[in-house]
Image (tube, rainbow, N blue to C red):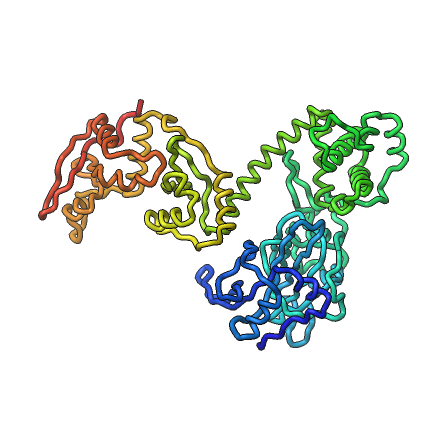
Length: 541
């Protein structure tokens, strides 16, 4: 289908066109799980690949349109990024919901479009819809079945072919977006079931799904989510509490010098704890947070169901544990959150590494200090030797090392993107000392690893197609006469990529300690050095 430049005269397109967040796209055939499919790949106007997570690869609306109009690519797309704005553009993709011949929209999708009531355009295939709204969501994005929602890290193909029944601008829909997120993204309820008004969900209902987990371990269900409403404001309770409780009054007036920090969020939590101590209902505490935020010029965050729900239930849990809002108690809460955040930070670092390098790296081990050597621990526990920090932090050196030793590779990236990867590396480093286990125990572990990888052959069981000389020539371990025969050179080579790998001399010392004897094995003009003895040995010291 010929490309038609999206009309920047449409308010929604005009707003997006002012931002340097555009890419071109073209279809590429890729195989996923053995099935070939067309994928819309982001491309820069100069032909280099683009990434929805790398701002350096984005450009202007006009530049992208000109490249497509010149016949180089198939269309243009807008990349979502949250930036520093209080609210931001959120994209919702409803897949396979529209009949391209009749224009009929599936009931479940129609209910979503009607509720959000913002700029809605037809996808390039004609079978889907894209809705753009302004608001906030708790995460970068999410997907469930035919429905996707993103505020960052993705791009949407943009057509400008919008449904004129709905607004032609991107409308702020904070409350409706919260409904959409908790109903369709963070719940197991099937989209097709949402064909009418959403039924009231009671605790224990089959639709009462877990939507978030607090740091305390409490699982928040859909029925627990609180949409802040000033209609629940307990004005009489508030007036009495302010008059009779000096600490509540100082907190309300933002005069608590004893709090661990003076951020508005810290005061929200202190107020919520104080209200929970007085047995306010969750809805009343939510209204307290909303009004407190409004008084200090940040009503948007106070209206966010995710923020308020998390704050209210955390406060209630805290009070249930016998804690209060005194400085020492809040500092304990912050320390607990810091430990949890550290784990969350490690998980996020692993996600960055996976997205940028397409490698599943669980952690990085540092062995020693001066000098230090580093090892990547891949998913499944396999350790890959990297070497000194100069290799770990150099894109070129690390790439060459992985290609040479593991036949692993990753795409080159801009220095800014590589800096992000290195920062992620630093978040998952674990220091390991040389002497954490005994020499014998370490060497036993190394030999077991080698034998597990190489799987010794039984000479007596070789078939006619394979001779002992073939095994010896390959330095492969083998069983003969009830004894294990091992090439130290082969073992040291195979173990060289592990952290704290053994040397030839260490392996010979260990095998000698275990009663192994050295012997040169040969045949058909080939000789190899082997060590042989009983395996496994007795328990290590």
